[in-house]
Image 1 (cartoon, one colour):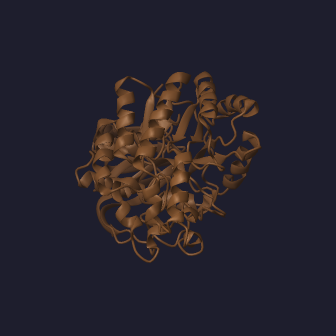
Image 2: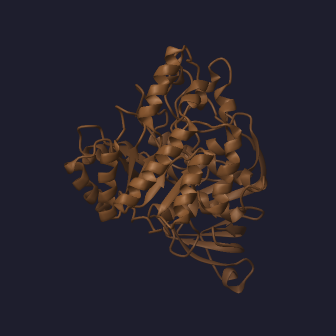
Image 3: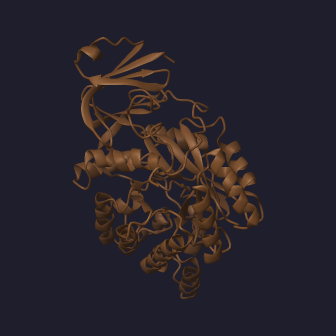
Length: 466
């Protein structure tokens, strides 16, 4: 790897600034920025110079919600850490935070070590972990403290999926109390899984088996109710709360009300809720199965509330919840019973591009694009300013982005290990051109030059908004 790299002539866009500047990279980190054409920039020498004229120079994306190789519903997510992080790089994301899973009856340590083993030596870009708590007890509560010290500073709990990941309110409260003590951040899948299971059973008994019924039984009110309940439990525990994959206007309203009270409550949404809807779940010939995820896609009218939440900062982060299952042989497991369709969508490669299209469509500003996709996720999960910005001392995770290139999203051209695209045929403007991870070229002018094993584990500090 060259010792010094110089990126010249681009428009540097961060969450805070836009400036025509040259960027000097030394030993894998940002060494300096200087105005393009200035005496300071003219004096720099480098082993390699990259011309960014006509392009944006942006921080590498930080996707804090992925599920590589996740076992689910009798199968497993189709992207490995190798294929998934390669696809992330193609899409301009240079850091992922994936979820290690504790199995019921097992320790957190055992689950975390399993995920270390899956990822070690296989990732094209840097990675970190959250911990899914499936079994809250005295032993695992103590382990939470140890994990925070190790740089695993966030813990996900589920109000959904009884019999799999579900925790009752008492267990959730105990985990929240522990995180209030150790500085960890509780992440919540907020859906009333007990009530949803009743509605699933009733729908199937009526012969309602198609994918669209997945969305109909996972009702908006059951997301809003669980979001409200999670917020109240966090208030009782004195802990912060981060609600994942918010999909519904009523759930956004619960977050906004809590934030108006000054509570440390945060929310993320995902591209699928911003760009897709129940129309997709209703596609004929079982094609709707491709769009089955939880929380589910909502009627199109919810999208306006999500965009508004991103503009008003009642929602702070856009992650993907990337959890791909092939249509053939995986999604098809649910033919004749929507409840057996593996829940999850592919998207790690599409997030940065879709959000750039949102800039062009007038939903968000250019700097807000970088804020919700790079800077805030990094701050939320203790990675900033190492990740999420372009500043002296930061890792040289840099993307050259062509804002004028046009592309059509398709499974034929994507790099995720899945046989369909959730955004098939969608025309968008803007495309990743070149990607550096810690100063090393991973994508060079639309040619992949990365390698498995370049990506390193990153220990995280605690949430930087607290």
